[in-house]
Image 1 (cartoon, helix red, strand yellow):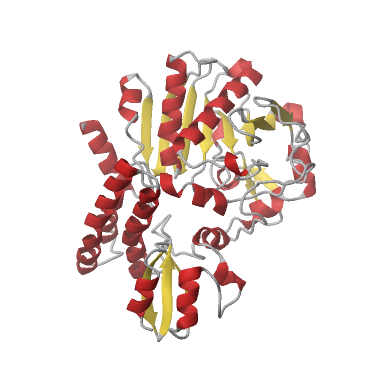
Image 2 (image 1 turned 135 degrees about the vertical axis):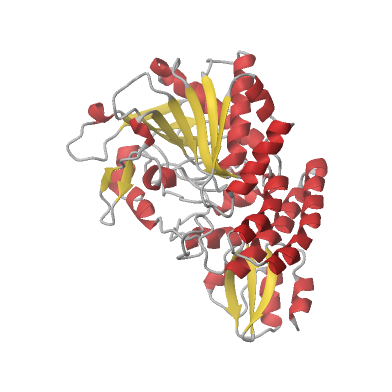
Amino acid sequence: MDVEDIRREVAIYKDYVNLHLCDGALCWVAGGEFFDCREDIGESTAAYLVTGEDHCGDGENRMSPAERLIRSLNLFPRESANIIREKGIGDDDDDVFVPGNIVEKKFSFLDGKSVQELGHHAGYYSLPHTKAARMFYFFFESRNKSKDVPIVIWLTGGPRCGSEIALFYENGPFKITNNLFLIWNDYGWDKTSNILFVDQPTGTGFSYTSDDSDIRHDENGVSNDLYDFLQAFFKEHSEFVNNDFYITGESYAGHYIPAFASRVHQGNQKQEGIHINLKGFAIGNGLTNPAIQYKAYTDYALDNKLITKEDQESINKLIPQCELAIQTCATEGGESCVDAKNECGDIFSNILSIAGDINYYDIRKKCVGALCYNFSNMETFLNQEKVREALGVGKLEFVSCSSTVYEAMSGDWMKNLDVDIPTLLEDGIRLLVYAGEDLICNWLGKTLFAIILFQN
């Protein structure tokens, strides 16, 4: 059995998009990463690729692409999502599900600082349009004690990861040391705002449910849950109702943010509840319009000498099929959108197979591990009993990134989420689009998206 035979066999499993021979071994790429090399090309290898069953390797080879991506961050959640099957595992109030109920407590992670002094909160909100879902959140009042600064909500992308990655490694109040102590982050956004970090969609972080049907599959479900949460939050913290409000996030939040901003704006216009003083939204390194952004991959890669002109010409032959798949997704939806994600993923995968160990979140660096970063300290810290007790999450394990959520949102990936942005801009709501030297959601694709958006 040769490579092309195997390629034909696995054609329906589009996660495995490229097969390569290297020194006589078979390698495949899934989701943009080299996952394994076998010493021979045989029936057992083909059987594994087709069925997902491991006939000649260890348990590591049985993981899905999403699970492998999570492990590559040095994250090892025990569960693929927080779906609990027994009482007494979640928060202190999990025995009775009261839709729309919010339970919040103050906490302190810093020695010598009282809960009253810090104004740090953690809580659960029982999502009303679910059977049993509870959304977990952190709320940090401004470090400078100003009540008048904006309220900012941060949404981490994935689509599978809890907001704690941003909280502890990006723009939150703290950083985690290697001995699991917390120190102040000099660049934390809480210095100039009151900031919310939310674990969403349901199943990520400390957010959980006891019913599989509560796992979200599209932006309609995600944005409605977030809007319901904001209504409860501002009811609980009425002193902040008149503050300016901004929606922010990164990566796959390029989908979440426009949908959520549109939902808030519609709720305000229809006077559905508490008026939320939405002033703007910011998308960092975000995926918003895949049809535009995927076409920019090869230009960006060539400009940054990750590929040659010949490589670009070869990879560009994949673009027409990607465009057609996205168009089919837009008209037919459903499984065609999953097909589009896998079809267009070939473009990125081919670039990576040439670029090698580049850090595709910051191409100025080399990659250590498949996703280039080590977030294991966060997972260890949050799963400590004393930390879970301080946050009021009971015995619930922290699910850093959820493969279940990732798979559930696969049909949402290739949809265009810029369609509601013009209305928001026309009504005076401001937009910031920014990007660093990120290949996967690069500045060139974002610039083209913004130019076309404003031209239209």
